[in-house]
Length: 359
Length: 160
Ligand code: SF4
Image: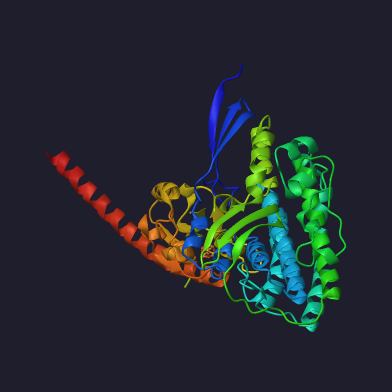
């Protein structure tokens, strides 16, 4: 038997923008076990609900993660609105959908870039990030922020997008789609990319489901589970099918994300067509009382918020189960038996977001 | 101002929410493109001149921040990006947050903003370059001085 070594990976590692630490137990070049240890980004913001009032807490919820910040804010608002029995105006729901899909596009493009960087394809990395700036421009023009939007509030949204701008956005996304396709075709067809990703980090559908994975990781293993199908915000009026792939390897996970970029562009076009006129927010008075589980499909998978309120300005309990947390057991499983050179690729294909895992 | 060398940066996320991290990377990629000046993001602290930290510190990340700082060769400059890195920001009251980066290592440039915009990050790094230049001059002077002293000592010993 070969000698066993333990190789520390992280918390500061070139391929990871975020700190996660793994002890990789290896035999020669093969990883036999991966032991994650977390806690480098833990802030303890769930407990902040005791200090900030429930309306103010939207800002904190948005800063759980800077990548899907809008969706965090939206999930929190949904939970509180549901407890208070507020009727959010439909126009606000549509606007939330548009911003949520824009975040999905920017998050997936960002991931595609980082993945390209992980397997050493520098020009592709730069190209993906260049496309992403186009999406950020739209976001900045409509909300005023680039990564933290601050446009969601309890009872609606803070800003409106007028019809002319909405048409412009759809048109811009259409022209961008053809450019993006040029880069994503490289992911799908290039020989060297396939060489790095095909057959690496395989997890089958049954196993993935048993381990509780969510989002693109689960859909890449052939299980069509997408929290958007629950029909929150405006998704109940939009037509779409969850994107699924069969193989469950790194390549399928990459394919799922590539296809979801175009799906999101289509969803925005649909929402722009159907968006009703009217108010964008309602007045909120009083304090919530009760509890609620709110679920939203983020770029990385399904997030679950638990909110409990007792009729005062401060919430009683606030709890978040983020998608990356659900995907970590699958990642540890995939790492077993992988080659040492494939470790960065496997870690990246679950699209880890450590800051929301640890909060 | 002109650059005599291409300074390399190292980036570490202490406890940031990712917002500032992606803006740091965005300022290195097309559109803002700091790389055209030869400013490259390195994964290795021993190659880096500028330490870009995002997020406040907590007990476990403070050890890592100090470790990276100690491994960087002199002269070095620290840039704290985002209001979290400056003072703890919105998370200041959290039980696991110690405060800004300056609780652990000396900080030279503070870049405010939540999230800090790429323009202000670039501005901060340009400020850091000035400081770096000045430090390396001082560092050189010190080195020349110490060499002179050493030579003197050696002569002294030979005469002995
Ligand atoms: S300053 Fe704001 S955007 Fe930056 S890490 Fe802190 S909370 Fe996130």
